Image (cartoon, rainbow, N blue to C red; front, top):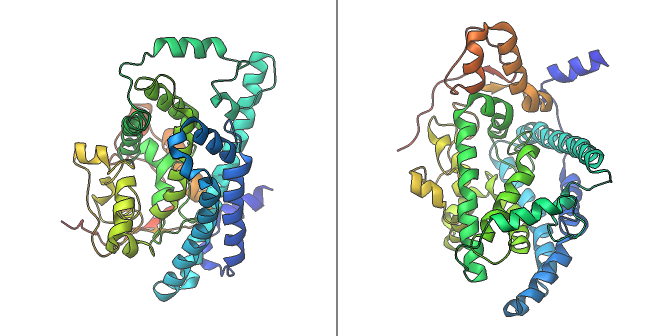
Length: 398
């Protein structure tokens, strides 16, 4: 077992020839749609949630069958989108290089899902043991459940967060989305400035030199720590502007954002969103598409632009980190496109290993900077597990 793990750890997937993954992408696209829109109960399936949403807002009756349209468009769009990427890559970097880039990043993404499932299983058992009854961790989001294990805490939550100003539903939802994006913006900014967060959570997401909807790795490794607290924060914000937490609208928006998020990471789709004025407007409003691809630039300094993803990059514009995409796609990947050992284990755990090595081999006086220091800090002794070498420097375009 140890020798097998060592072989996997040292394997360089750029040396392998991967087969055509077309049928795998069909299955993966179908599974994502089926799982995301019909099976997952958070606290209801998407179809049931959508129907309840229309019942609550009769003015939206014309969209009664919109959930089926969303499911169909989502599946067709995902598969078409993947094919667009692969055809475009075959004409530029070549199918072999694309698969060598995509396969290890896809495996790193699957590895993250397995880690999340394992941690959720542990947390469910811990909370179940503490409360004395079995519990679904995602079911905790159903704040209307009269048998919720934290009912007293929810009642306090509702009393402690007053409705400061009651706005129309859609305006309250829009304001909630803008304000809720601020901590996401701040956290994303921190993952690029803090060496611990960068190495452990975010570096692998920026390592792909060709962006593919299923091949950029997890957005933030170990992100399960923040998922439920972030959602509860949004609910609390919405209560400030509406007479109750806007659970249905936030869940539906998050599903829609998940659909559009696939367009954030596509080299092939860049020229479409940057040149088609209608698509450009849609993705400009959502803060993604070609606007987010710019954030993956390998030119030094360009990784600090377009960090938000809501309502015309609202917080990027406020804090001066917004940038319109150029007509041509920039070079992508880690800064200056270093040579990497493309391996899912190294992509996901390489940063953790670097931090662990530095703690072990450096004097304790360096530990604070190793954990809390800037990405520009390097301790006397360090070891890189992902990057093998750096080429010449790339300069950010003005």
